[in-house]
Image (tube, helix red, strand yellow):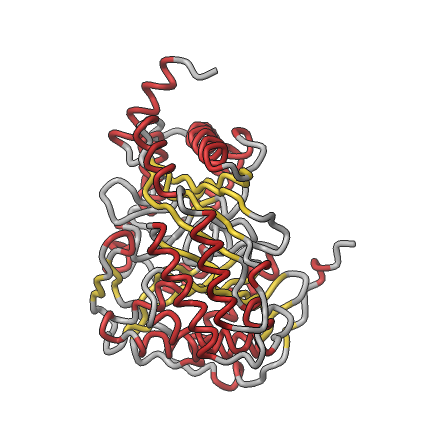
Length: 455
């Protein structure tokens, strides 16, 4: 039972510490929409999404009003669209883009913030439809507003598909160039994964995985400000106390997420999937993961000790979440998107936080290199090599890693790129000036590591 003290405590978290439900994401299977004719497929996709999600936004708003819990985003994730492209008769890039436009229209019709799943899983190889979808991504993202895309290029069990990695470097560059008028905004809607998960409610990487059901509700909770405020009460205490404080706080946050997830699923008449407890920051004051790390005693996020502090935070968040719900999933942990975190932005601007340090931090964080703006003249091969490094960390450590970088056209190191809203402000960060082209051009597949042999 929730007592009066817990109710007042939660109210304070919401009013003063930026506690919110970051997203209610409805996963919808589009397997039944597959077929040879593009017009028929698009009609089925539109009809199914608008049928299942017609009350999603209203339900979220009703829960928000009745329970007094802010719900920031209502989103949809769908079956990886490469599956539908493969089933088409004579699939082409333009047919794939027609499906993307259909997703965009359906998302606008039901009023959600984003729709994810313009995706392909190519960690071991590519079918013709998957290759077509990947090649269509720049055009699809430049011609839609709400569609998000992801590609999985590696896994612990399969290794890393370096042909896909090489291709994705070119795709990221093309996506940036095709949206140069918005400083490469399409890249903010594109993420490259290793070990992608099937129940992630967060964008841009959300898709409904092969093992999921017909329709499901996944909820993402976020509360960096709550954790920071909790740590302010234990200044000078040892790390055992710090870890316990984070764990207890994560428990309380997850309980709220569980309540909202079950309520939303019940009202919509669909299955409840998971609660993803991820400390996902925003540019708002008091809502920063970097400031949590600094509260542990670091002068600036990025200095020595940052990786250890992040490891403690990530582990304690997961332990607290698991205590609160039997269905914790997604990417639960701590996100470190640079442009979306006020503390990360400040650390990058003053030089305390570098791309190399961020890569080290991804060994222990929830995802990977996220919302990082790099110079517009960065080569496709360098972007591919950044993806390969991050995929290797995920593969060897049996964890999800990802890359969402934005080579902002015309931008140079030290420039500031404004995206607005939750996407924030991106200081352009330097990349290593030496070439990785010879490495990337080898192609083939980096074999799976020894730890893949689990059976």
